[in-house]
Image (cartoon, rainbow over all chains, first blue to last red; front, side, top):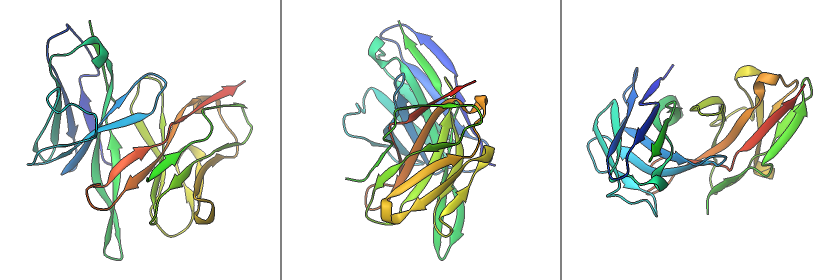
Amino acid sequence: GAVVSQHPSWVICKSGTSVKIECRSLDFQATTMFWYRQFPKQSLMLMATSNEGSKATYEQGVEKDKFLINHASLTLSTLTVTSAHPEDSSFYICSARSPDRGFRMVIYYGYTFGSGTRLTVV
Amino acid sequence: AQSVTQPDIHITVSEGASLELRCNYSYGATPYLFWYVQSPGQGLQLLLKYFSGDTLVQGIKGFEAEFKRSQSSFNLRKPSVHWSDAAEYFCAVVLHGSGNTGKLIFGQGTTLQVKP
């Protein structure tokens, strides 16, 4: 089945520095990937949609310049948290979309998630 | 607006008892619906999904869900809960249409606690 690898699993950084998180589809090509943010005891909030070879589409309220997304290949998307602050501390999860099956000229997609990255900014 | 709602924030059941987690959606077209489970500090694991066809969907770990269009629901069920089922459960819907790019949107989540 589809596997998505996300690294690092956890990272601690100092305020003002930048952190890069990688999301890789290991056994399939993912033209579309998604980045989510999750606060403790809360649901996943979609931050942005990452499309291979084009600019990411950000959800309303998400700072594009703070959360830089690059999807340079069909198997890799990266999220860079720039000039990190303690309020950026959170659990970040990526998801890759892959074709699941086709039925009557319609392609249905599955969504496979990485294991998440715990970011702590001190 | 298109959305998915999980009315129960927290549910406690005894081990061996049956379970039903509720999920309601608001969507104009036929929704694509998913149930995921998340253990603390982990990513999400797919339990089951509904695209079309048979409205009763079987998933992994003994879970099943039934799509009911008339009630706009996709409730998750399990006949006998095990202690290892304690986790966070998320219902999700795929948004289609212009500009949505197949985005997967989540409900608020339901925390399942299992009593011995």
